Image 1 (cartoon, rainbow, N blue to C red):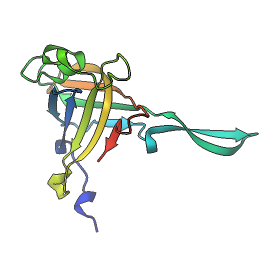
Image 2: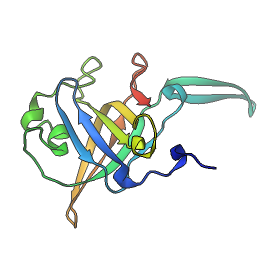
Image 3: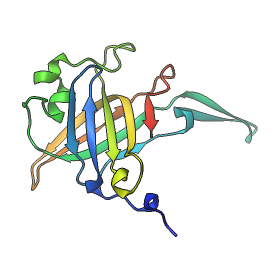
Image 4: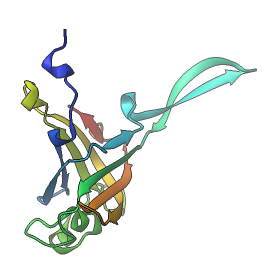
Length: 169
């Protein structure tokens, strides 16, 4: 017999939050079921198998494993508003021009935190499930249609010195 936790999530069961290292936040409803994250591993490390004459003799964790992610949102506006838009956030425009990069301690690539919230609390869970990627850069695609779409794809970078680079709760 299934429990409420076994019920499949549908696209209307979530939202995406994008934030900087300071106080800027923009949220958008997740409507189309296209959120993907690949490369999530135990300890976020790549694995290397070592062989001697074709026979495996060791398996080691080697280096940080970055995560590839993508999602589509309904295009609600190109720019502006009090909190700005998703486009403003990743382009560093309007209120987001003052954004604090989440990866400032690691280099000069501006990154933002991307969190996907699955509304499992609506299905009886104690809290919503969250996939949080702390150091994200994105490429953006805008397409016309009914509705217009905003497609984001990018990388969530992992830094071994920060065990919270990728979290799933």
